[in-house]
Amino acid sequence: MRHWTLSATIGAAILSSSAGSASPVQGVISGSYVQDRERSDNAFQVIENAIAGLTNAQRPLARMTLLKSIAVDRMRISTAGGRVGITYDDKAPIIVWIGGEPVKWKLIEVLVFDVSAKANGDAILITFRGEDSERVMTYHNVGQDLVVDTTMTSPLLSRPIVYKQIFNRTN
Image 1 (cartoon, rainbow, N blue to C red):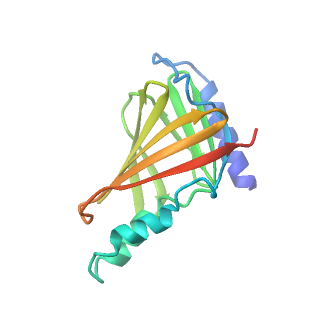
Image 2 (cartoon, rainbow, N blue to C red):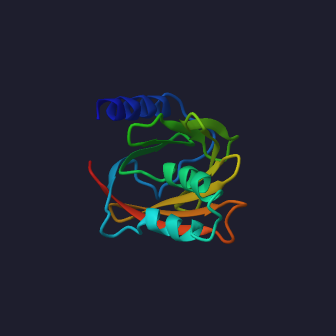
Image 3 (tube, rainbow, N blue to C red):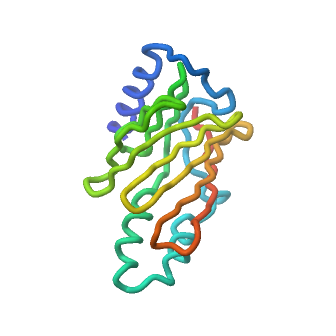
């Protein structure tokens, strides 16, 4: 918890340190959120169903890659000065310019992503590109809730994985 709070504080400080040229997305409310499991899709089950058709040799790698990248209970999101900062649970914060070049972000030693962000109306699209997968997460607020629509693709999968998670604002 202490690491998560420190990471969120660092991310917020960096975001507020200077203004960029791009305008912030007005539809995403900066704040801390916790996942509402009752109203969210069960992303773990969606992924398990998607990889069920893979061979026994392919399934463990696909499972590790896809599942490790979705286990999020809490997040802090900040938008300011044309940048977005996101901290998932106790992971390192991601800070990226909206419409700018991708940044490297390491989830764990074997999962490194190029992360980019772009605005789409009142939503922010965050794209995570890895060696063998791509995940596009669309963040938008509905009232005080943060809704995250996710689409994951991989050459191992016959079709994209799609699920929705809803997060309740905690502050």
